[in-house]
Amino acid sequence: MDVVQHVLLLLTVSGVLSRPGDHRNLFTQRACCKRQSHVLHIGQDISGGPVSVDVGLCRSHCGRPPRARGQQDPSRSLLDFLRSKKRRARGPPPPDHLLPSCGMNQACAPAGVRVERVLLLEGPREVEVIQECQCEVRLSQCMRVPALKTYHAETPHEAVLDVGGCSLSKGSPEGFSCLPSRFDSALLETPNKVELVRTVVDCDLKETCFRTPHVEHHYELVLHEGGVKEEKLREIDVGRCVGRCSTGSRCLLRRPSDPDSCSLWAEPQSSSCAPEGHESHTFISPHLQIRSVLSITSCRCRS
Image 1 (tube, rainbow, N blue to C red):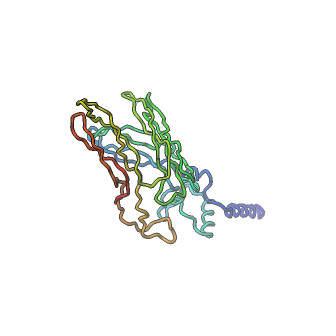
Image 2: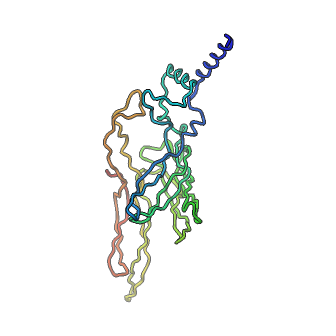
Image 3: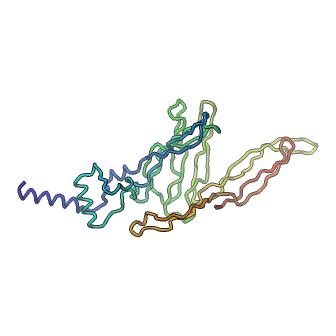
């Protein structure tokens, strides 16, 4: 190689190394948000054996855990080595396994969910399995977004329903989240009967722990004048407590060189969304017994 060719090669390599921008290209950023295995033990089958299901997980960060010292990546090229050496001179970038799998104001979320019915010792149970993941934009407003679920997959009764969900909102006030506010039902045909699947109609910005309507029907006996008895169907909104209760950050100590990494964690404290107030509904049952049904009036986070 003559002198001119050698100089041109050095200039080309220097230009590549000094090119500004993120060291991850667009293809890598898109490929980071993908499904990874997440196996859960859900109980015992009718023979008493353990049942585990890979429900999947959408990875929130890229890369793999750091390699052991001295262990080399066989797929790493000489050009990658020179690039990393050049970047170290300007300051180390965050490790690959700490980089978010999606862009700014985005989150890696399920793009398709399959509902599997598993027969356990205590009875049938439905398990939601993530099929694939995609980057979803965090919207500035709270709104309903599509959410597809597949029921009875790979059978003649396979059906895909848009059960709906709530947007991943950004900039919400502390203690508030975008949560369902109104529900509806969709009919699902099965080999044995027609099932009702609850779907989300509207979403509102609510406190993370809140009361949602839940209606129950009871037969009551109404006594009229002259001893005439009438059996009526009574509708009672007993309510439910829905939401998540956050205990805040449990990180007690962080490294100054790596603020995203926690060196010391506090003991977890359990906190649940539970009823705070209630009222009683009393009526006479068809068997001439006085019955009382409690309904939830308000909810709060309890530790």
